[in-house]
Length: 233
Image: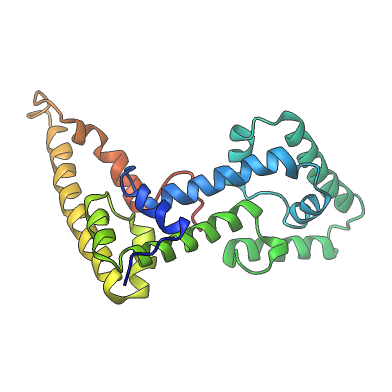
């Protein structure tokens, strides 16, 4: 069997050499692209604005991501004037014990407990992120089915723990490779963290830190929860 040659698999193989979890890296790139697309052509798209209004806007994390990364003052003003005007209209006609507040409570509960329950409640950027993560995990599994892809994966930083959990849940030979590599990566990282902790003791603070030790705390956080640009629920 030849190695998978679709473009998504090529992206995964290329990401092996970039550092960090390849699925995180590629999902973040997909989110960046989606935000740029919205900024360029989505702000004046009535259908998109309708969907965003039905969702109550972006989720908090992606709202601030939009604010800082879209570089679109006019777009931000238009989108959030639209969203806040909708909230204003609802509040004007609402009674304190009326249906509006019950509906908002139900909406908030569905957002917290079941982010996939219904397209009208899903932040559009979260949807893009989840789709990208699933797509790249599928491609990763295809790449790991071949010796050359597996060797490249073993030379990479491997998956973060959240993406490894998803991969391991699928089982199979590829899941075994993810598990073995993650164990190796975590063993090395834990040893470095032990050194970081030891050198925080006043008796050893005179010892120089290696570059790996200086970056180990941030590496540990990224390994535990994934890239800081990705929304986790």
